[in-house]
Length: 221
Image (cartoon, rainbow, N blue to C red):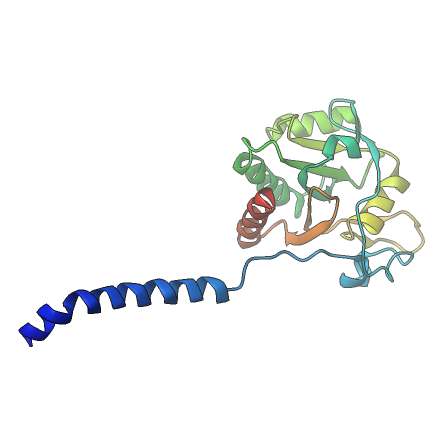
């Protein structure tokens, strides 16, 4: 046996190493690569989508917008051009899901503090009460980084249109009030090409881990 090992040991050792390398390469080739879907209105719960776009099954992107942020500055699509961002809908006096959503967005802000590709965009669904001073106070209370995170207000009809036609994330409110909205816990991930790439429960820690992973993935695309 010892003579055999002396004679063929080097060959066997080389064969084992070669086999391990080949198997590793096969595993890497066969292992499914991470991908993120591109969402269109037809892919989403119809309750969250305006009826005028529910049929759309491809080429959906976020529409141009113009709102006012916590500093009284006009925020448009240009401020998010080429950026990956998380959008949501809230109101400052919400005492149910909003505090947890805001806390979780703060953690996303911290996680990507040094990544200029990543931003946040929160829309109030009660613009009649969430004025610029109110949003500013809310931003200070929650340590909002003005360069990273915009809290915006504006015309209710325009906010409604963005929520239901672009972000596909907000339910209807009272039927008798045409522009009444019930905000949801949804965080919407938008890529640098203005496409919707994911929906996340803004109150759930596990979904926040997934969101951070997905933002990181998009940052490397």
